[in-house]
Length: 164
Image 1 (cartoon, rainbow, N blue to C red):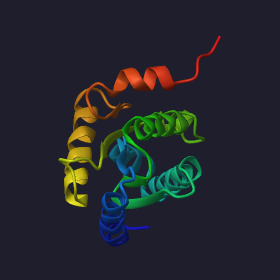
Image 2: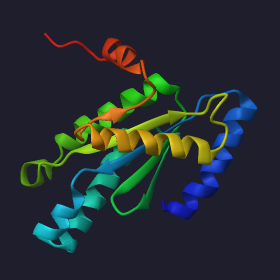
Image 3: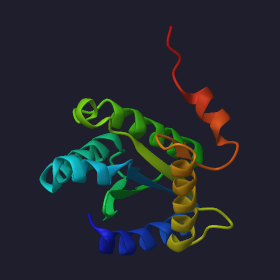
Image 4: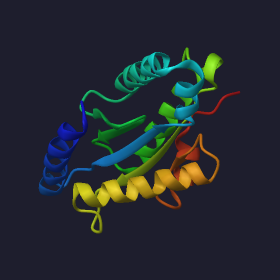
């Protein structure tokens, strides 16, 4: 799906979430250092990376969630989850990108910003602006990370499966 679909579907999803009292979160996912892939390997290879990223995102999200390419190497995901699970989804995506087939060749990573419909974010523009601000923070703080609501990191660490 593309930006036009995102705007229309996103407004509908936010309205429905508010009307029905259900959670809705937005993740903006950006491929880190994508310009260097295009510069070093050409636009055809860059297009292959973007197509595989779109496929990876579609595989990773839930059946009721939606993925949109909103420009360049940026994707938006509307998920019918509250903030902590949406942030965990961001971490799942980040880890899946690092494990993808393109990682060995490009050292592929993604950064993401997460926001959720709330009393202060009641429109697509509101949740988009907040997710975008958090994406920018993820980029500025070193990339290859997911930034969400302050304090949600502890919830994510508790929700993550433990390995022996």
